[in-house]
Amino acid sequence: MQQTTVRQASGRRPTTRRRFLTTTLSSTLGAGLGAAALTACAADDSAAGTPVAHSTPGSARPAAAPTIQPPVANGKEALQRLVEGNQRFVANRSEEVDEGEERRVAVSKGQHPFATVLGCVDSRVPIELVFDQGLGDLVVVRSAGEVLDHSVTASLEFGVAELGTPLLMVLGHQRCGALTATIKALDAQRTEAEAGEIGYLVDALAPAVRQVKGKSGDRLDNAVHANVDLVLAQLRKSTVLGPLEKSGKVRLVGAYYELDTGKVTLNPS
Image 1 (spheres, helix red, strand yellow):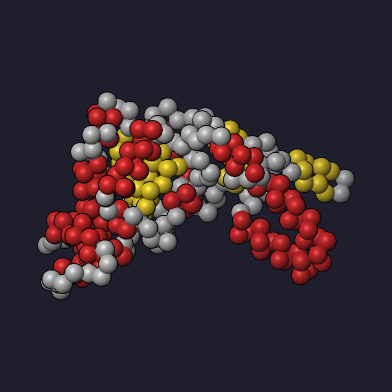
Image 2 (image 1 turned 90 degrees about the vertical axis):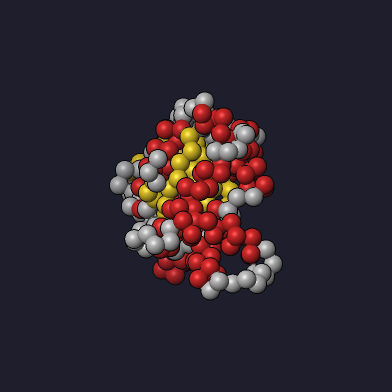
């Protein structure tokens, strides 16, 4: 597997999609549509993975060539790559991940992701952004509260067994709405069924809430961590994932995402 990230020339901040939009708008208002068009063309070329020559009067300095990341050899290396990506995200120095036309065409021929991540459906936890990864890097499966069912478990098994990712991470997060709703339902001792299939989520998450009852610390945070551990325990019972972990072909880890800081911390093994 080859992963490509584009780094700008020394001294230049990487152009993010959001910064590109604001830069283009500023150019349009201050220098007319012609300057904005040039800015847009340069940014598009950079995002597509094509080195862009940035010139000033009397000098010309090409952008740094794309850096090719080597394939990961095992779960430890895959986890380290996620950790480093999250550190960039937290420090607001995310790389210009290669998600342009060349990368899109490359991954259309085949995929070689290096990690599978099960996360929550919460819109504030976009997995690829949290770990600063691009097209074809991660297998991402999401369900409310990381709840497992046949489809979710099968999808995780596919990422590990069929696509060969040596790492499977279960990622809980701060102020999880699904677990908050479960706590409220249990506290109210509701006996009536929730609308639609939401009751299924409450039933699935209830063991984590009950497990932390009476423990010191924040009740919701405790439940989030307990739920991650329970999900991992369920996954280890999989006839696909369990043997692969025992043989050392895949590593299973739990983690916690802080909405306030953007930081991911690993659960104790």
